[in-house]
Image (tube, rainbow, N blue to C red; front, side, top):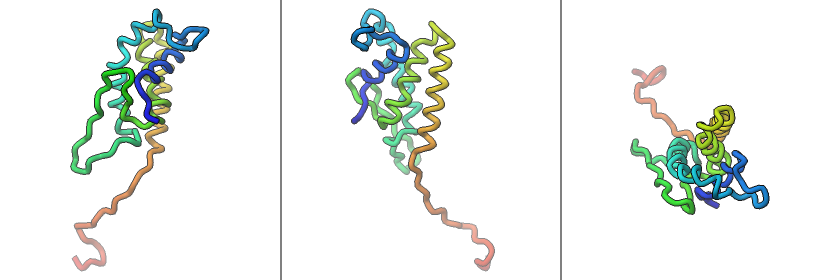
Length: 141
């Protein structure tokens, strides 16, 4: 299941305790200024995390593929769900609240960095053989 921007926004609002106490959904009166900034911030964070995502597939020709920008809250991000669900809500929440509460923002952004680094370390890796073009001992050169 690919994650959309709306899901990430809702979880960020939950982390910031900016949700309706009865429904658990973002309160439109409180969350409107945050919502207005969300897509721009998500695009920056998603680009940072794209290369740590399992959905990133290098082209092998030395160029980096770019992620499609998120322009709508219903649009799915081109990141694997572990990154979208486990990392982005922390980064989004931290950047949204940075002006209001620097302590909370610092905690959330530190958590964002920790989880992103942990997921990047867990990415499956492949090894490619390296051809020895210089020769060496036992090659007669």
